[in-house]
Image (tube, rainbow, N blue to C red):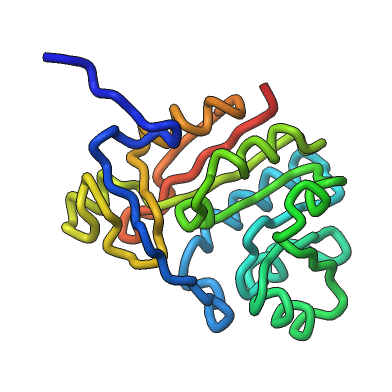
Length: 203
C-alpha cells in the first residue's frame, strides 16, 4: 500500500478545499466557543510572565477582554469586526489584519483561535508568526477526525461549514504547523466542539 501524499497545507492530496467560502462574522459571539482555549492561553501568559498578548483574529474581542487585563492586549481583526471591537472596547489596542507583518511587530505571545481554517493561505500566517518576535504560540482549529466521526464534516472535504476553507486531523495539523514552528504540545480541548489546540515555540 502506497504512502499517502499531502498538499503544501498538510491535508491529504485528495482532500477538497472550499472553493468559495463565505465570510464568518462573529461580532455577536461571546464565549460560546473556544472558551477553554483562552483560559489555557491565559494560564501560560501568566505563568511565563509575558507583558503583551496578541490575538490574531480576535472576533468580537469578548474572550480576549474576559481573560486578559488591560493594557496587555493587542487584538487583530478585519472589517467589519475591527470597527466593532474599537467601538466596543475603546480602552484596548486593536490593529488591522490587513497589515499582517506590521500588526505582529512587537508580539511576545500570539493566540489564534479557530481562525486558520478560514484562511486561503494559512502557510503565510504561520510564516508571519515564525518571522515575528513572538516566543510562544497558541493555535486552535477543529479536529477533522472528530468532525468526520460525528458526520459534521466530510473527511475529504469540502468542509460542511461554508466559512471553512480546509480542516485538519490532529496528525495533519501537527505536521503542518511543524513546518514553521516547533510544536511543544497538542491536545483536544473540547470534544463536543471538536476543538484541537497546539502550543508552539520558535524553531
